[in-house]
Image (cartoon, rainbow over all chains, first blue to last red; front, side):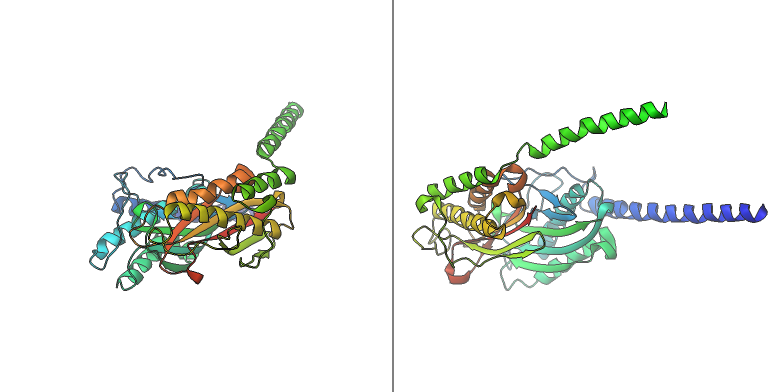
Amino acid sequence: MMKKLISIALIVFISSCAKQEVMETEDTIGARLEIELTRLGFKDGMPELPPVFGPYLPFLTVDKEIYITASAAFTPEGTWITGLVTNETDPKHVLYAAELSVIQAINRVRLAAGGDLNNVAKLHHVNVMTTAPNDYPHTEMIAQATSDMIIRILGTEIGQHSRGIIRSTSLPINMTHETEIRAALK
Amino acid sequence: MKKNLTQILIAFFLLLEPANLLAQTDDYRDKSSIDEAFKLELEALGFENGEYPKTKSNYGYQVTDNFIHIPTASALAPDGSIQKGHVPNIASQNEAIHASSLACAAAINLLKDAANGDLSRIRKVANIRYRTLTVPEYFNYVPTSNACSEMMVRVLGNSAGTHTRHAEGLATSDDNQTFQIELMAYLK
């Protein structure tokens, strides 16, 4: 009888530990995202998706594959960051645009995953799209900051990705910077 | 009580299923209606008899399981020419929009080939990348991209034709082509 009781207690203990671990993981993605949102000035959490400019979708899923439309930098004040990057552009400004575009991209991935980033199994690929001239010295740093931010939010296991840097002569509506993510659902 | 609950649940699911089927078939298009829609687009673009020419000017496609990748579709005109030059300095905005429609027709034609001639086998266009040869001062990509996004929906319908997208400006392109499309789609 005693042996049975100990076994039951042990099972209950182990399962509660496992549950706690799962909850911590879920909290961690949410908490990490919240930290980034607060740092960038989004006081009310994840912003609403801005409108699209034509007959296309901001995100979609086919089976477990997530596709998003390339996401530009949308500020907490509800404006786009626009203007070409030149060699005189402060890298801090480009970095801010890159981080805001990551928030937009992550938001689309989140919505594609049913509103919960915990449903994302893996990021496949990230495209960092800049209007910087080809001799702009900070492009690599901006791309690295993009990757770092994604991993800070999603963790290494889910967030690590392959990456491309695309230098566009210009972007639609004179956007400064865009981020595109391909991911998979669990 | 248990039996009643089970019956209620079964009835609920039986009621739900036809509703789901209706939702799925609401925008359903069969092969002939898609072919007809595509033919109308080709006629409007000046292709004789609404038929896309047999050509080697496009770059083919890859099919892996049910995934279709079209790396490049060019804006081939009915006379065999392809719009060249930067927008807006060499090619005008209207020429870029026309090139978008032509490249879109080329992409749909490649999708048709990838689906063994039956566009109703296309389950979903997942992503389109619009590549326009531009100068840095040009930002008016939306009408150019929309020309193809709209055609894709007109031909394939909302369910299969709506997609995510990206537009980028190229400093140079192969053969100085003004506009090209990359497309990813899925077969049923």
